[in-house]
Image (tube, rainbow, N blue to C red; front, top):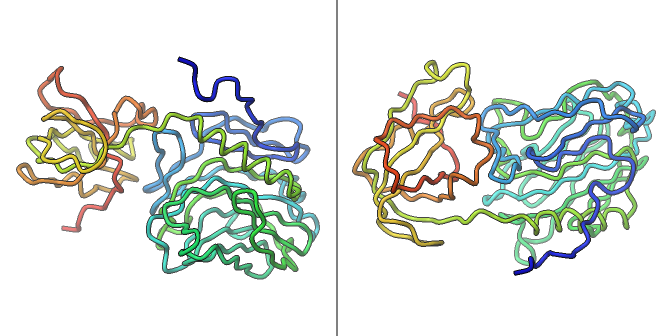
Length: 351
């Protein structure tokens, strides 16, 4: 049977010749170029911190965590700042948090101030260098809610002006006077780089940084290109269920898994009720995060005999877990399928 996408021409991404940093997903080539834009400086993966982690497609799940890239080429910084007249585009494919943040939370920042993209309630906010805070009102929740929705976003900065695009269409404009002042060297950070702050609990991929303000036509083409990429992926099948915990693997301590900063553990369940998704066998095994960012999680204290609500996908679909420490001390049973819990990790209560 022919694929629905067979014969469809693959649209190029990133669009144009001015992209100097491109992060599609962690499972694809990540490139950072020097300020001339002709040779890659390095081909590398992002460094994850705290609750920062990847999903089954290699997208960043941020929550109260971060990911960072050492994008610190001096010539690139000078070109972006452009002697007080900045000329660049920030682009990302974002899935917004299910719960709209009630205070300002950072989505991405460069060197803690060169630029910062954040969300506060129904507004997206952007600040460039020493310039003013630009507040872009998003569509009203009644017409087009952002919560849990996936959007292609571009912020194009040129001289003293900035334009916000959502899904390839211009939505808001703002003034960026003084925006190229005081740029410094530092990392590109996804999520809040400040441990004491609440994180942006969304998902990010398709990030690109361009050393020019893309035209409206280029922004539209880029939105179409990344939407095509996302559409052509085979999404993992999610099942939401209630299940009774029968037995579990031994949960190691943070000290025992060192130098690993995270760990998962395998538990065995009896299915009580499938609420959404696909048929499951009567018994199943589920791998849970039990340690993230060297912090023990609530899953590690789950009680045998209790019933829990879970959201799971097939464990084999999770390339991001290949190098993660795993605790599986259960007796081998070939007949039991292994799944992975994709629920939001919660810190273990303090003792």
